[in-house]
View 1 (cartoon, helix red, strand yellow):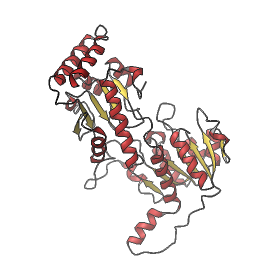
View 2 (cartoon, helix red, strand yellow):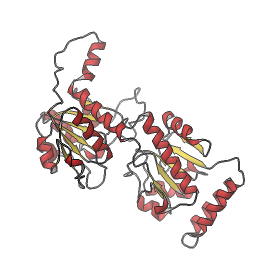
View 3 (cartoon, one colour):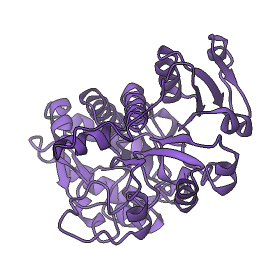
Length: 373
């Protein structure tokens, strides 16, 4: 079976030989090396791999691939660890700029498989220049992220983080813990893709009114009672809670900046479980200091790379902006864990491995089901 797979892949690669002979020769050599030993399945280099990643991947793998764990994030220094792998599997905080792409191409990697939905950390033009395909996991579990969004909002509203710490010290008092009824409040949802719609379904269950904003409104979804689309400015002005569910791109970078915060309803809560770069963190700090923002729940931070997914408990936190942000008692920061459910991890692993299998079967470009274009 392995020899047949290698032969099929070689036939496919010969169709691009004229366009990129150097890449063809590199990949031909790697494939022939794999094909000589049928006991050796193809290798996937898994960067920034955590135990929970590997557990889910091993369960979904069924022996089809060798999973090479690389604890470090992808960089020009670590890319060489992917030598002999057909694919490099990376996560949200792996930088895959032009230099990293070139380094991966030089060791024979032909596929970059993102085990996440966002791909703002990948230089797609560099990948195209080096003949590397890029795939992602566009929808693993919208419920996981939506439920974490609601959890942050409820924790901040009812001050559960403060109550928990207070009770641990024996201070069983209620002063300063007054929240508000979710029922009847207006929730602004920016981005009505799968996750945004799950959030809307959840807050409608609390009896909230929803004001939504999206560059491409889902008019059928807006037919529900208590849901309406509005301009971004109108959403910010009306909402008691604002929740972000859009991808990070040039148009959405610092979507919530000083001007946007000034347009928000005084004392509103801001939740971000999407990408850190959607919020200008310094502007957020100013909004918290002035009271314009009443609370903030953040699962992402624009400078989280090198901080989140790391144990820094024995070190001094050198990021002054994050340290200041975490000093507010009306801010809850979680370390990019909204996706972290058993169901989501399983879906991520299954989709990623299916994409690698498609690639090895000879599919390229638009033939790949979850290709990033």
